[in-house]
Length: 218
Image 1 (cartoon, rainbow, N blue to C red):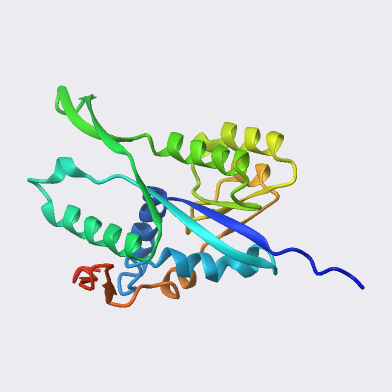
Image 2: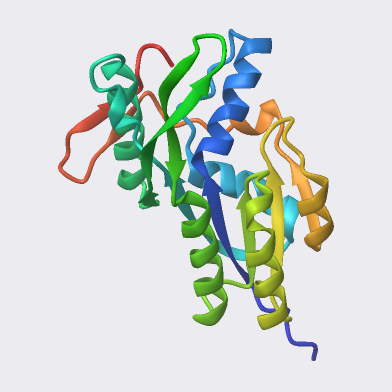
């Protein structure tokens, strides 16, 4: 009698800003779509059939950074992002936060320096979590949702150390990266339908019994 094939464990590592900018670009083309209240567990489940037919379960880790430097100029943006993080953690998604670092950049048209803020630590955090997943045998398949080539060395190292495991890329809408695609056993791109089919209900119940609500702007 033939033994059934073992079920696979999938781990999704999601680059929050890469995904966010993809959705922002999508909304510029299709402003009537409602896609920002994205249930990442539902998104992962809706991608199972593109990965393997025998996935037992999947876990999601979301990497993001709060734009706290906007607390005076755009506090609503921070509030919406915080609401989203609360909805994610209520659905048992691990959220890993980086930071924004100020940087002075020369503005030629103004003839003086202006301060901008750069997101820091996200790529390193994703790379570290990828290597941890291999070392600790946390998954059979790791799906990275990003188009950032800074992860190339970490993916190459993961493949060398874990020849029995797979790394896949799920590229956010219109952000496919050919360099990363060549590294992976397979890759695919997210479409508007993946975002639309994977939305939270308008109110998400928190562990306290209270609810966090979808921002009106979303």
